[in-house]
Amino acid sequence: MLKKIEINVMTLLRIAIQKSGRLSEKSLELISEAGISFNNSDRKLITPSSNFPLELLFLRDDDIPQYVADGVADIGIVGENVILEKKSHSNIVEKLGFAKCRLSLAIPKSIDYSGSSYFNNKRIATTYPHILEGFLKQNKINAEIHEISGSVEIAPGIGLADGIFDIVSSGSTLISNGLKEVEVVMKSEAVIIGDPKLSQEKQQILDKLLFRIRAVQKAKNSKYVVLNAPKENVDKIIQIIPGMKSPTVVPLADDGWVSVHSVLQENEFWQVIDRLKDCGAQGILVIPIEKMIV
Ligand code: ATP
Ligand code: MG
Image (cartoon, rainbow, N blue to C red; front, side):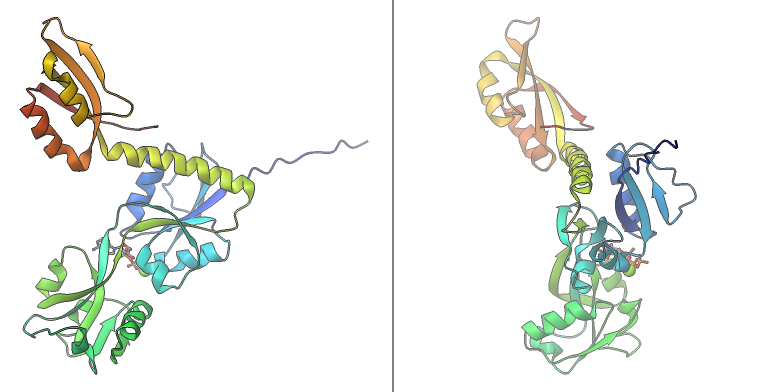
């Protein structure tokens, strides 16, 4: 009699990331920092991980919301601007803090700007017609939208439009094209979007992935700090750097001194260091943290 052969098809979570562009490198870095390895040398359309139940699908960023909505990919990494432009109904699962930018209206710098009504009866060039349409409707502005596929910033200079609606980060592209930003319509950053109806198995893989990503993100925002301080100021120092539970305080060979070990947030770093110095702290060492599980 033939023996029944059981084929164990392992469930894989499929993540769509941008094939090449501003999101690609950071998306791959995030996955790699979460300890997930890929043989990525030949950039096939779909690449499975060698040590985690995840496979990568490389796409143009514009297509990612639709692939996730259709269930072809389970999750994806994309800018919030693209989600809004594509009117996608996918869930935002996690904000990732990179590819930060804004979508703004800009006009030639020589023009006096008196408010958004300036755009009435004007032509605006953009690659984001839906977001712009929403803004114009909301503000009861009657403007003509010129959808173009790239190099939006040159449109006013060549007489194609009176203004533009485009991605801005530092603003240097606008300046070098003789334009000025006059309205910020939305702010955007890279996020993970997800199919709202994942199977239980896939949800478990996603939870594991998010746990790792959060540990890496948290560590990036934190620093390990070691310092020496006079014993009598320890209480004050503990209040400044309370740490994850409470700081480690170790006596030094010199009786009047202790060593304090704790964790502080990157964004409050310089302010905290100044306050520590005011409390007599010396020999302050600040060390990066690789992963942080709280
Ligand atoms: P694709 O070929 O995949 O369609 P693309 O040309 O549409 O790529 P990119 O220029 O690679 O897109 O930008 C991808 C995303 O990165 C944008 O949708 C936006 O969220 C973000 N982004 C774009 N420009 C900047 C910028 N200058 N600074 C920060 N983030 C940006
Ligand atoms: Mg695109």
